[in-house]
Image 1 (cartoon, rainbow, N blue to C red):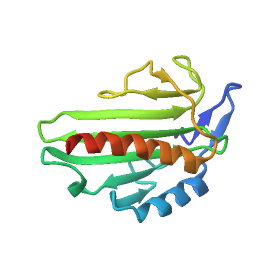
Image 2 (image 1 turned 90 degrees about the vertical axis):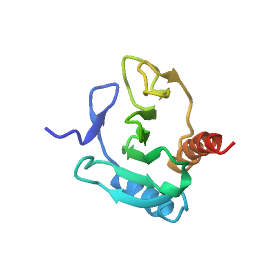
Image 3 (image 1 turned 30 degrees about the vertical axis):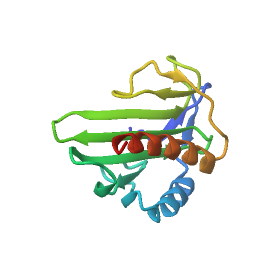
Image 4 (image 1 turned 135 degrees about the vertical axis):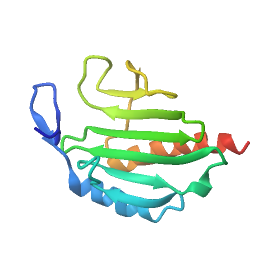
Length: 146
């Protein structure tokens, strides 16, 4: 069975909120950070994937993307991955979902999105979560140029 939802504490599945994902994608499609938004690509059919503009990064980083899922119960996942020419990658993830490894809201830190993560607290509104995630990623990218 495809993973089209997120289990809550009771074990019930929350459906993916495609309306929020579509609004998120439309809003960020206009950002100079991203060269493309892939809505529900074959490899991640319950997500949107925002592909960063290659010029946003120094030589050595082949590609970077931010994959997002949002559920009708306001759980979410934002996973950022950079792929480097040397064959390495740098990966982190912001999550809100019931689990056994952290509190419901947590962050899986780079360079490998390790589990368990770090317990966090996120805003309720999806727009505020997106702003928080992008601010952290902008700080990371600025570090390449300093």
